[in-house]
Length: 218
Image (tube, rainbow, N blue to C red; front, side, top):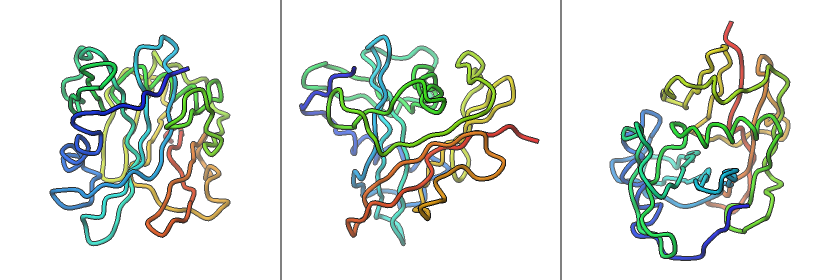
């Protein structure tokens, strides 16, 4: 299990994201985001080398608040060939220099996300070591999700990020999150799987919504 260190980060994760988010096609705020941490979870790297965090942040800089799902990986050295996916570097009070990447371009995160959707691993609490996150739910009944098949680059659009398998399966992360009715976090018709979770709104409520869907294009 990953160990969560209670320490200082320079710059902070919010500062890194405030500089990086406006470059994303799915970002809907102003040039300078005003971010609040409102949720998220972690996944464990089986080799214990890469930190994997799915952050949920709300930006209040636009005409109305928008909430984003931002998967990040944290590494102790640069990831070869992933310069385009670098969010930034920061100094960790315990671990030293860390390179933060858009997790959709990190094979370690992709492999663990697929395992989560299939039910082979469990989401972990964002802030506590060795503590499962019971709010994260999932389902899947498609063909096996093989990490080695997801070799094509992740593709961003105005609403999310698609990870495509050479076998035809698409895993779509919903970057812009929306509260859903209690039954809408089940996968919609045509989807082969889903991932759902909760976050905190400015009024203190805890809505649930879809984080990811899997499907096979027609």
